[in-house]
Amino acid sequence: MANQEQSNNSLTYEIQIKAKPEHVWKAITTSEGTQATLFGCSIESTFEPGARIEFRGAGPDGDHTLHVYGFVRSFKPFAEFSYEQHPAPAYNENHETVYCDMTFKLNVADAGTTRLELTCIWTDGNPGYEHAKADFPASEYMDAIKSFAESLT
Image 1 (spheres, rainbow, N blue to C red):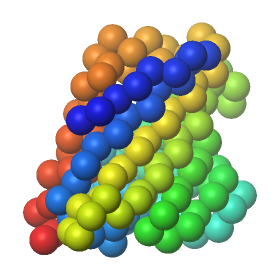
Image 2 (cartoon, rainbow, N blue to C red):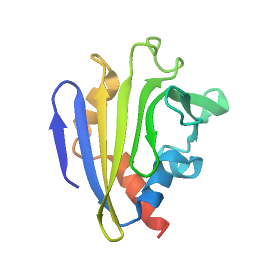
Image 3 (cartoon, helix red, strand yellow):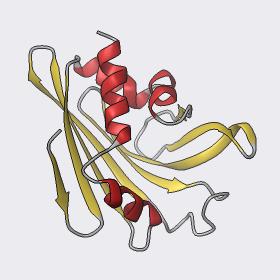
Image 4 (tube, rainbow, N blue to C red):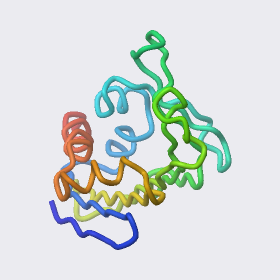
């Protein structure tokens, strides 16, 4: 996994996945994929730019607890997916001003291999940045996406 750190509360992860872009896309944009990669949470959205996006799963409010929410910025199937992600109100009282811009970019590396790049840009003071930076360049999330996508081939 090749990773590079950027300035201003930004981290970029890159990983090669032995799977078609369609399988990687399924890992990040379907409930089947997000349940396998994001602690059992399902993704809910129409994926139209400006539409709300929610990640829900088991938690303090039951099986459909809102964990994070946001708004879709771009959605280009099998190529790019970008959204603004906020912690749910139950997790951060400043949820409206604390967020992370998440941008996934997929590129075919060679036959049967996809290069996935994830750039995360956190607002100043966002505790998520310090948590991610402490583990950087490792990413359990990127590893989970890779495992899920490769299991589909």
